[in-house]
Amino acid sequence: MIYSFFRLWPLLLFPVAAVAQAPADTIRVLSYNIHHGEGIDGVLDLERIAKLILDAKADIVGLQEVDRAVERSAKRDIPAELAKLTGMRVYFDKNITHQGGEYGNAVLTRFPITSAKNTHLKQLAPGEQRGVQQVVLDVRGREILFINTHIDYRANPAERVLDAEALQQMVTGAGKRPVVMVGDFNAVPTSPFITSVKTFIADAWAIAGEGDGFTIPVKKPTRRIDYVFVSKETVVPVRLEVIKSIASDHLPLFAELRLE
Image (cartoon, rainbow, N blue to C red; front, side, top):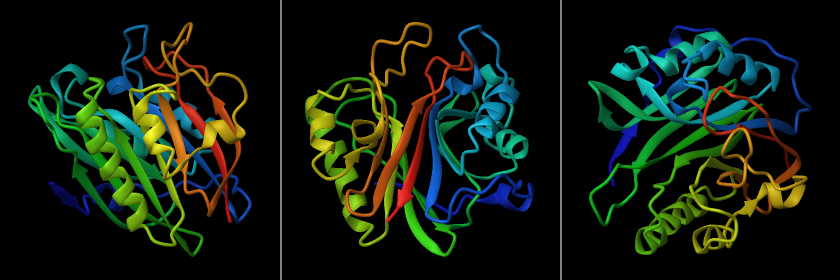
């Protein structure tokens, strides 16, 4: 396993914007695969992604497919730009080098970051390295563990078993801290992989979502592969919603959660 600690440099650059605060025991979470900022219209538009985050009044956002200094996205520092546009703190991790830059996942948050690290998932065959961000946040005086990941789309059963085991260790390692885990899991709810994940953490959509919860493709979605999971004893899903947008090739998933 490879770890990357405390890459929190943007915190010094951008003040955290004030938004209408949720009740003291409630947090608003968003999971969004942003396709390096490019929408299905072929336009790279970070402003509309930022507007979506602000309109949702999100407190914590897990972003997947994030570029920094990559040629295809004009070498822009996407995590830093989104932090500035939203007025949020950002924690970014590279999982691979791509087109002269870095490609990975990012967390935006209005809460102080206590600690953060990235764990590379084990690979059984050559392919894109995937990672899992683990960010401990101080939520109004209470620590929670926020996990953000993007699982490989190749349904290698043996590798998926290892992925589930790694995620379970992270959730178990949180101890009494509430856990929120989000991301693009590239698997439908009935798959063996998601079935395994649901043995140690709850699928928030299954508890408080209405309808199918499909997040891909954007125009006529037919699959649910983006998730918000929560620790079963300490986090209660209140409301979930799939937000309509053409800003990426995925739809963003919003969750309002109550900390017990």
